[in-house]
Image (tube, rainbow, N blue to C red; front, side):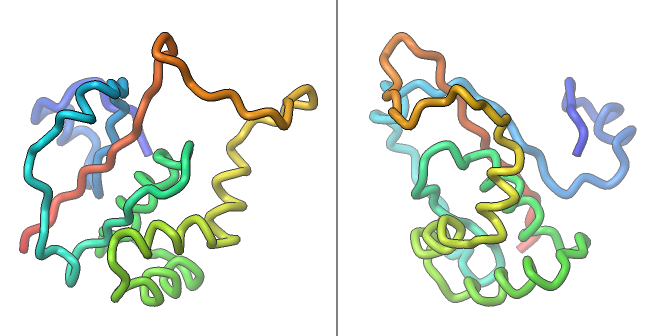
Length: 142
């Protein structure tokens, strides 16, 4: 994984082979509520897409989307088994499978900074908070 500061052809060529891009967007609730753009369909047989069903997992899901949609990445036994197991699932069930996967949960939690003073009380974001969302883009030729 590399940070990319420009999408011009020279910058992309300098990276070499790119399996996907992950963008970080500032989340705007009001825009999300009025988004009536059509969504993709007919991809289920050749594209791994999982609906995010748990909070704070968008980066992990973005990484999984890139990995599980690349034919050139060697996934290893556990991710290959996961991909095969979820192949026939709809996007929501795939999201649930991700949330119930010990492998994914362990990897996801390994990136959380240890905080001995962290409270068990969950704080809900307010309208004044800046929220961000990771989204993966992969190239598919079908």
